[in-house]
Length: 307
View 1: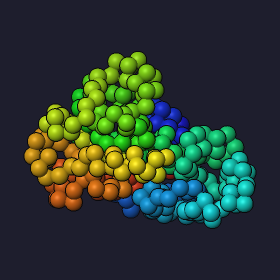
View 2: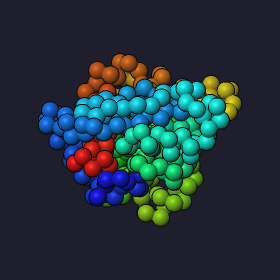
View 3: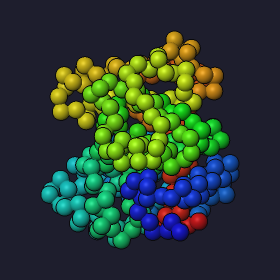
């Protein structure tokens, strides 16, 4: 039973629960009109202490398409935290006005802390470089809808693997499925955090390799998951400038890829995918955006007990 549950990281959802959410999202996608009133009277609070376009708008679109409404803020300066109010007090207050809360913060662990003070379900909409479970649900729905399942896939993760919370969440989620292999493509400075190797990949016996050149491995991949080098995670601007153009996917590189490859990206992109790739049928990142709304619709419906 998902009603009332907090979703702070992908591991909060069992494989069975993920399958339920994906199945519901696919039903909504096929017949959205059948679900347009299931959350009537429900209020979603969107607390975004960090800038966002897709995640915030997709949550707001999701609750509206389910017949509910939303309240919240898109800037920490618009909230009483700017006056020094504690996160605990903000959450207690907002929980009194809403049925479910989606929260993004630049601070790792903020969503977990919020869940300790909330009487309503908390959905982590991204906490620093840590976790982003609804992007993971989006990614899983995209993979399942296009590839037909999660097993027997070679997944290339390319770019900023150190600070990329979407990468960390996806590794955790996909490691539950059989015969999945990861190809980790990044400069040395942006390799995945060591805890992912020591706590996830190695203990579970997941096959993975680390390389620096995308060209060397693109032909081996079923999925290429591109990420941007995130300026906001760097303390030293010179390091960002040196690394920001490490990987740029263009039409020439795509020539070496399989015909059934899919290219994913959590967006926003900067220049890591050339616009010329957008017209390639293997580029699914804008389809991914749409899947994100349906994944969040399904999650909201389940956590509020509407379905």
